[in-house]
Length: 77
View: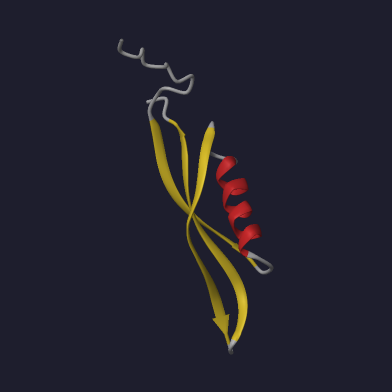
């Protein structure tokens, strides 16, 4: 007997954008800053995926942490 497909409560279309957050203290804060700032203008954020971490270096010292974050949100079209 074939299984019935389960309807996902979150069915729909989602858009993905990429943002970069920065912090002087940590990658975690950098990622959090990216999400907090994006949430001010994007509605219904669903998933945040860290796609890259790097650091800004000046004079041999780390001066900033950066997190590239892919964010998905429901597209109302």
